[in-house]
Length: 100
Image 1 (cartoon, rainbow, N blue to C red):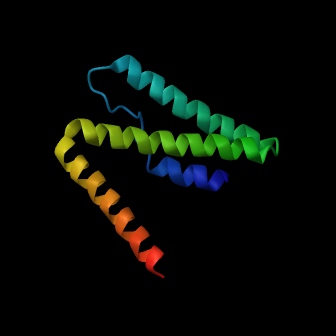
Image 2: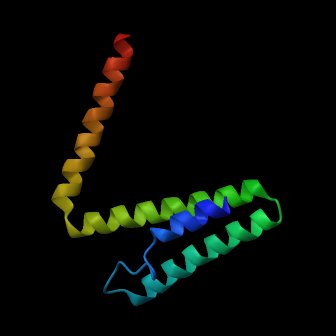
């Protein structure tokens, strides 16, 4: 799992600063990601894989949610079109599955 953390870290911004106006929020977010990364590595070292997986999942999902939120803040209309498109595709996929 450590190699996955290293792989995920390649795609992370160096300082995780997304909100230009709120420096305290950016520092807290960066500290949170670093804490999760350290926790995951420590739990792997102690062979507590269930906790390492939880920390890895929390780190990954917080990055996804933060990216999505920032995209939404920058271009609200495009994100709404994207989300509505996903909802329509899911409904269409359910209809196709129910037919078989």
